[in-house]
Length: 451
Image (tube, rainbow, N blue to C red):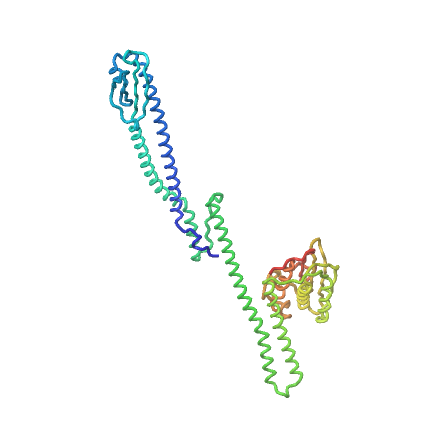
């Protein structure tokens, strides 16, 4: 599914991380400057108040010893604190003070001391403009320092983020390499417990899954092509035979013996049946691949096996066909189970020479029902025991050549067995020949077939 471009942010991750980091740092610097300015103002006011209090205490002490008002003011007035003395008669001694809006003042009344100090008032003043100037220079210095720090931080972040995001660039390069056809490459993170390590490991897992799916798809396509080619090759023989026989019948005249015509008609029927069996097997394989639908019911395996034995006994009187075992009931599709048993018994009869024996036995274990079909034929070579269940595989010996099989029978039978939740395998029999075992689960609830 394609993600809409409006919902996918494609701007540079490096730029986004840098911008976000610088923005966060800017907010922090603004907060620091604001807090520093506030703390400076509070501390300055506290220091001014302390200075005025100390100077007031000193003025009260000095009023007892100073001989004249001028001498008193000369010792009280200074660069940091200005003083103005107002005597009891209204005389003002000292410099003119700045407007009260721009200063911090404290007025004290002198009591006791020299005669001139009786009833006098002292006004102490600290000019706040000096403090405001210092605070302004401090704030501007912090702002300029912060801007420089932001610029340096942004530059370092661009370099640092580029290094930190190098694994993402490696993922991008690997993805492009794989898109160009270079399969098998992986990131293989050294530390898969980190965030980027987990991402890289998940990326490798995804590549494994995709390449595995691609390999399975290629194998499936190759198998389908091979299956179609083999099916066409197999169909060509009976179709060619039907065409040749039909042309012979058309070209024959009325004087052709009846026996010859009947022989040709028998051959025609045999070839059409052969083509029909192949088509039926191909249809069954297609249904199995798509998920065959099963009509599940309680089924007696011994009864089904007895029916098949009775059928092949009429078709192959030269072979001794036997059935034995105990009645075992399973939940299965009786039609499909009969199809599996018919395939196994027919194959066994075709592989068994005249006078041989085919044995069908029914047994059970704790969880499984077992149907063993054994013959006294040439057997199956060990190297071919797994291959015979593949599609369009026929052995070079009499097990297939005598029957003219399509090579799909065992593949269809195994597919139907697995659709029931069971299995069909070749097992080592008690003697010569071959033994095929059908295993079906003894389940109360029927299995759910694939669809």
